[in-house]
Amino acid sequence: MTSAIDISAVFERMAIKPINPAWSTGRIEGDAAGEVAITSFSPVDGQEIAAVAALDEGAYDEVITQAQAAFLQWRNVPAPERGEMVRQFGEELRRHKQDLGALVSYEMGKSLQEGFGEVQEMIDICDFATGLSRQLYGFTMQSERPGHRMYEQWHPLGVVGIISAFNFPVAVWSWNAAIAWVCGNVCVWKPSEKTPLVAVACQRILARVLARNGLPEGISCLVQGGQPLGERLAGDHRVALISATGSTRMGKSVAATVAARLGKSILELGGNNAIIITKYADLDVALPAAVFGAVGTAGQRCTSTRRLIIHEDIYEAFKERLVKAYRQLRIGNPLDESNHVGPLIDKDAVANYMGAIARCKAEGGRFIIEGEVLSGQAYGSGCYVRPCIAEVSADYAIVKTETFAPILYVMKYRTMDEAIHIQNSVPQGLSSAIMTLNIREAEQFLSAAGSDCGIANVNIGTSGAEIGGAFGGEKETGGGRESGSDAWKAYMRRQTNTINYSDKLPLAQGIKFDL
Ligand code: NAD
Image (cartoon, rainbow, N blue to C red; front, top):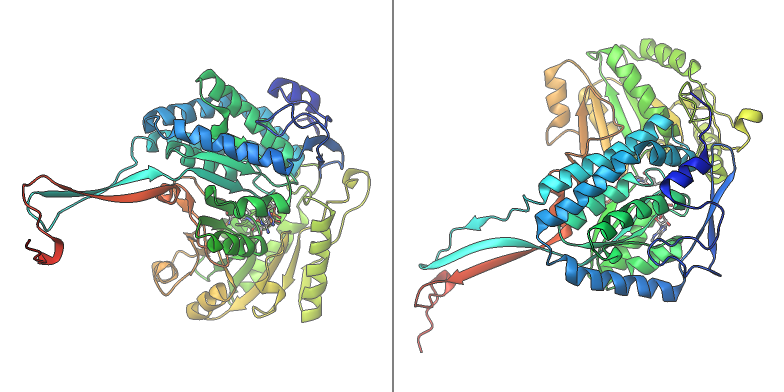
């Protein structure tokens, strides 16, 4: 395994051009000259990879107009044919999996395996959406009136705005877009300003599929910019649904803006995920689940494990194994597959990590593995930190806060009720897990009086999810659901239809109205 990728070759194969401020806003290519460029830096080596043109106000309006025009055409394409377009996109992604995965790793800083895994998730959701395109079912209901039939059907919404975060820079878009497309919507994607390049790569791949099928590129639009552009999209009444993934701070702002215009939103926000490790746990399963959950993607997953709630009888023994495992972690270039932990996204994230450690210490936290910013040639970008572990009390303010970094808080419990209370005592409600071979404990954790999260697992960790289930969380995680199960319903409008095939006009509820 080489420790770096040939980025020029990747660009060449994917037909994207590096270091050129005038090359992409995606769909309106060529109009970008003179616009402000977003610079893409790799946290892997601190290199400037590319400059991507940001949108100005006029160009934004043109994009939305083209999306609206494309919708008029796309909504009339039969859903299984829309599924066929998505199937072809999935095939293109299979072809480009290595290159796109490597680019994700290089621009975002996650491991190469996780970069490939992210593209695999995109392929999986395309497969799922292709099948779904023949299964957008509505119910039929029994009418109380004779000679009447009643049913419901689902229609597309229109333009769907997708605001995505840096940590899953392409998969989150595809979870939304693939489902939205088969539902008959068109999408406008505003990726994170920290990962603009992978978004361009996706747009290029999709544009080729659309062109081959004689479809307008407005079905998938890309707008590049920062927070102000996200705010503009959220406030735009022409955008029927906003699906926003990011921090709770961002979600509160988007929720208020969209609600003020009575639009629809799907919010996928921060998590503060815990694993309860009971005295009946298989510790050989619990240990890798906890370590991968806490340090994978350098703690920058919304589902990263941030808290371990450990039964007092096994606390010391498990802590010892945990510390030993952390001492073996190799931190370095994520493109080198022998490393376990890559960099944080940027120096702001490093400052947040250091700030959280200081706050934890000020509240009384005791670090059993100390955190630090790593220096030296291998860590030249300044974004590499050591994953750390602190023994804490569950009620510290910092423990209730999501810090997007590899800081793991460990704490003790005595009874299951206490463990569940601690698990639920944070404002966020995304992912949760219990490690136990005791069926009573597992069922209590999954019961109505158990975990209050959108995801509750038994004997697997908090981190990662399969696309087949509905993904999302409660409380400050925002309440939205994306991806599998019946999450597609949020991308469509439900219509109830009643048809009278009799020669009478009976009114509902037996009301008489004789003329
Ligand atoms: P962020 O909130 O800083 O930015 C996310 C996106 O929102 C970016 O595209 C940004 O430009 C945009 N944005 C920021 N403020 C906005 C505003 N006021 N109005 C409209 N758009 C705005 O988040 P980040 O640092 O990129 O990502 C990390 C966060 O995302 C973490 O909190 C993580 O838990 C969360 N996340 C959640 C999920 C989930 O599915 N629940 C998935 C991935 C990431």
